[in-house]
Length: 336
Figure 1 (cartoon, rainbow, N blue to C red):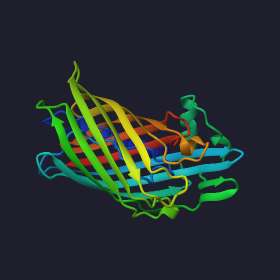
Figure 2 (cartoon, one colour):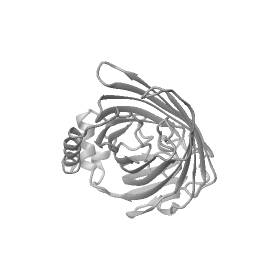
Figure 3 (cartoon, one colour):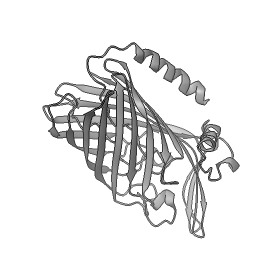
């Protein structure tokens, strides 16, 4: 299944990219992905964005797909948690430049949960890199169950496959600084508001209104082959009381990203980025709920045509149990 899905798409992308003739260098931008845990992605946690605001009258539209494999089986004297399944997130997103320094956008996500097909692939991935399985091999394959109990009282349970619209997010950006070079140093302030349009009982949304404010920064350097980019973001988010574990939900979270990318040619870039956030829940001794999360995303960008791009990445939970074991990310973006 791994090769059936990944190999043809990658080969096609490479063949197309090899024929592209470009008039400008490939911009290295952050991967538009994050923590896709079923108990985290329901909130309006922003993904890092380019530090350069779109010019007036310019836009970008994208399709973003994340497939996250979740497995956690915890049983303490007070709490019982079982997260076993695959979470799917497909997002249609658009950004548009409204003036010399302003930008507005909208994210329309679709979320789903199922038993999935990647259990054996994830087990092989962990074996290949010598990573702990954490009991995954002993669990039934392709099972969906998310459940959580505290002091003998069931607080959460989802065991039926589903798919539907998530919480819509409105975004805005303002260019604080941008240099004059072709690939300039840049700093942007961004904000977002997430509305409770998804069904929280099926973990398509949180039931809360989330407001975030953050900074995106980047710098670019010419090297002997291509160019190198450094980027980062940092900010905070407030949340109203939602419907998922409402008595344990926090009202404030902090988040950030730090990454590096290298574009050796004008059709390909390699990207590594770290992303993390503070927990969204308290009142628990389990890392899945009440610990700071940290992920490593590794992948890159391919230019398929002058203004058409593909992002491919894999994410791992560096802080174990705070994010999905493995998340596969694929994006198609077009500027206009």
